[in-house]
Image: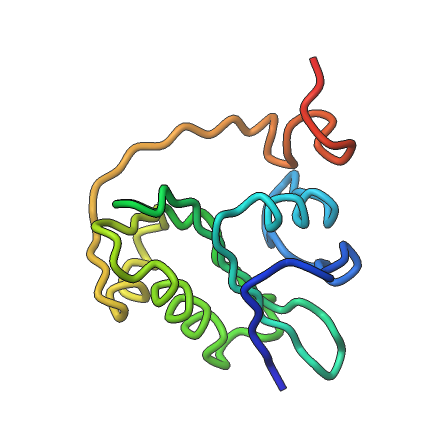
Length: 145
């Protein structure tokens, strides 16, 4: 059975294995936990039979007008079960009442988000791939010089 939490409390790095599929330099489970803890809103999907985190979504928000959803991911072996859709629904419920909720995604994923009332848009981004695994020293509590 899949259950959903709105907090990373009691989540350990060992529960966060297998995410960031296809990333050449993925964050460690320890860095992944730090990004969950540092997000303003999270929804985490847990397989109660195994205790593993199988999906998550995060948001950063000013809690006044806007929010940005940087991450939505479901482990490959759990895809196709509606977990991603449930994570999005729960996050949009948490962000209800804001003027704008934005995210960037690949073009082929826009139709997925349109099911939740979102629209495709043009955006811009900056990627510092040398920090894809997190800032230097990120597993020690912060970036170092």
